[in-house]
Image (cartoon, rainbow, N blue to C red; front, side):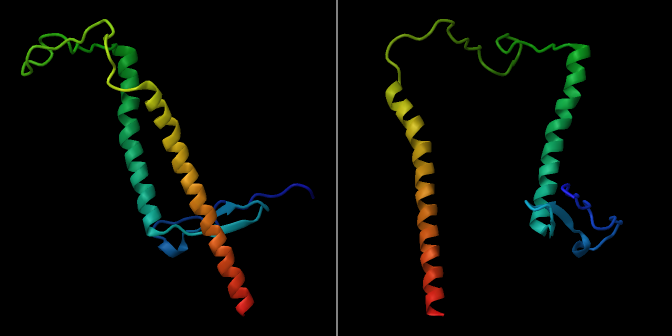
Length: 146
């Protein structure tokens, strides 16, 4: 009696050529009851584009793993003179740390790094609270007028 049953994932088996209106999915809410949701055309296009991008991203990565394991990595050095014959003489950066004055101020950059995201989140929070207050006032005034 204490256990809850999980509803079926699909109401009925999907067949090829089913109409868009027949595709329904069940999702669980907090009470264990299912509620039906229907995917819009924009959601389907978004899911399709996401799958396409992820496929284009992961297939080359997965094909590289066996190549690296069995064949080894044989990459040329970009500092080699024969790496790019069209480019001028390679400019190899200095191996020691630069000395002298920095082009940015560390305390100012740290302050910006901490205050800008915090300020944006605080501003969004204030706008949300103001919107909710305005919405409550509108609902209570319409309730009193009715």
